[in-house]
Image (cartoon, rainbow, N blue to C red; front, side):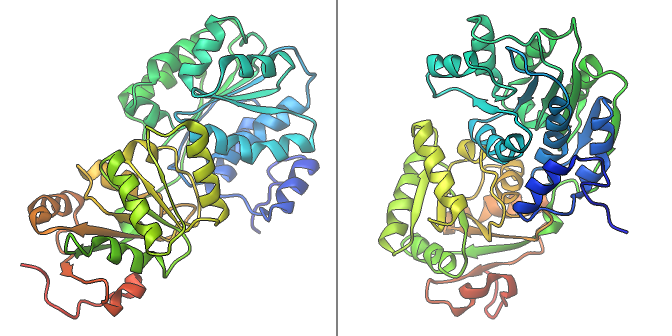
Length: 392
């Protein structure tokens, strides 16, 4: 008999709120962790992006806080690496919190400190924060962690990648006197992340959702040799056959240019990168998530905040700098148990670097095939057949 959220101990109001959104069956990481988290245990969960981690920690957090009384300061804390992820976690948890009378607020840079401080003054049950902004709020005495009963660190490996573990450690040390229940989730548990676990989690139960180390086997990979003057049209031909496409470029200017060129090809497109104001990036991401635009063009840095399910294809318009970037970019399409489809464009002078990339990924048997924007095979890359010889 398959598990349900009710059988895991989730209260009726939350189960009904989930059902209204069509969520009735827990993912593996949720089935593994929810019971112990509700019981008050510290939890260390190893699961990649798109595996259902938000509800794995969000449901126990809301349930436990819903059993207590409101206080002046936040009682729940969720630390995330990016602004976009903070927004998406809040979007997922707000309707669940409303079902049991709890408020959830995102706090991150790019928004007025005063505005966030005013909102915190009115009382918030749960804050979802990026580490830097939360440190600012604490140091300015605009919020306090003294009432936090449950703290979650999400995507700890990415925190490490972008240098956020020191402020995360500082934040957790501020609560050492009352030591709240602490949950940590990470795709990988390297020595640095494990040090954080050893330092701040008390006798944690550990769970891991099995997946291949790199996710390569969960994706179909196509390497397409394209002409520089035809590259945009090839991308447009592919994107027009699916609902959601993410295209990656190496530069901010390149992202803007590709977005403009695709719009000229009749595709609803937006770009996101570090030079754009946070509200602009959030607006573009929401339109993409809602299906109002078909194509999102992003740089690698901005890509860290993209957590949208049902992405049909990732296109590397510019080949990534290394295999880690390839996997991070490509992982946007292999989420929530779905198989991913990835296409890498290769210009004539990029073949050597792409061959090295393929070898590092274990994809050196995948051919690089010459295509043009009129090629009929582009309408179904998943069942792409190599009708012409690979580029030598």
